[in-house]
Amino acid sequence: MINRNKTILSSVFFIALLSSPLSNIANASSLGDKLKECKQEFAIAHSGNSTQKIAAAAKLKHLKLMKEILQDLNKKNAGKKMTNSELQENVMVMSHLLEMLVTENLNQKEESWNMNY
Image 1 (spheres, rainbow, N blue to C red):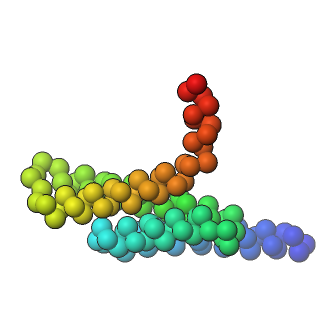
Image 2: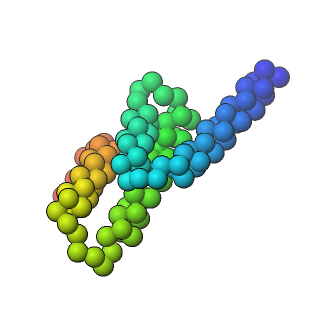
């Protein structure tokens, strides 16, 4: 009986955790806010202090934010000549996204290198 209650409570907590990021993604209006939130979720997902459920939810939110940031950049910059400050902002954002992707996939590097040789 106790295990069943723990499972139900864990399920409810996990569903609540997954539904809250969706509302936060809509609230993050500017690119800077989305990038900041993306970095925070990345840190939570890779923190050794997080439970597996919290880390999984943070990773999912991080991936959704990355996709949303890239879509925003594509819409914002499509078919227009960009100023130096806009170029600098885009490079900064893309470098942060690339840094997170490299860090996340660093463990798989050895496997992919072995397959190439």
